[in-house]
Image (cartoon, rainbow, N blue to C red):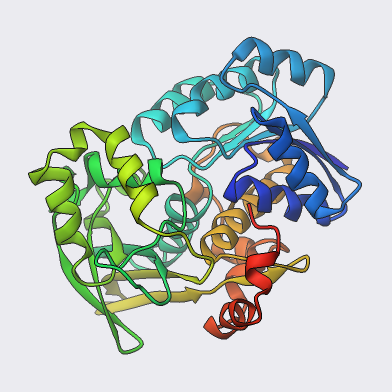
Length: 385
């Protein structure tokens, strides 16, 4: 029985805690500053091996006290990215495995420093992007003797956009603003490159539908560092419906909202709706030389909301939670094989897709499931954090 502490009872923490508990060989402590929220999530799962706790993870002392009285093997942080470094410090001090979902470059650098020389695994940037996208790209890249262009593209979108932004808040508003406002990193002409967010606009057509893609921060994870010197161009971009980038440029740049992020967060959360009728798009394109020929390989996936434990969960919840749980499962099955900083690209795509949690990426759901749940009124009545 693996014992884990999941910090954060929000959209992702609520599902990943349930996924692990439902597996049968995990005991899950779900901690949140709002103990009532944690209790509601735990009660909603109706599982005996998930327990709710009031945990103030913003206080290293309070977190350490909790962990000393509730022993676990690993800490999984689904908190906002800026909360993660102190959590990682406590995990290092108590010799616990550590996992997080951060896309923030500076936070990842902090966790990397904390992980140096650790006897347990420190795996930041789990989830979708960074996370699964790096695992998929790394697999395709390994098929080539010479790499030319590698493109990683991910979009978490409403299935049926109904506003001028053609967007819905399917995940953290802090995370969206962070990736739209911070510098981006990649490789251009064989050298590390710093790129501006909301630039590099391009169009992509998948299954007959047109999307746009543009630079955003953090989604590349550590892939550029891993492949530096072995690839000509390597970029990560976020996919949206056409027209979204122009509106966000106006807000972030022309109206200087990047300098007033709290105000922008308030505007987005007030004006942009949330939805469980979303779709996650994953696109990887790798070109280069194979056996003396110029070739291209692609990985394309559309993931829709899924029914898990009798509840409808959005595509972004499913992909992020499944990505984290698969990596946690792989590590805890062979804990002595993973020490110090563990990069996402160290995990094999086949191992993740073949994992009991990673199989969510292979589910053949369509938009019809969530549409039926909405039409019947069940989506509005069920518990979804």
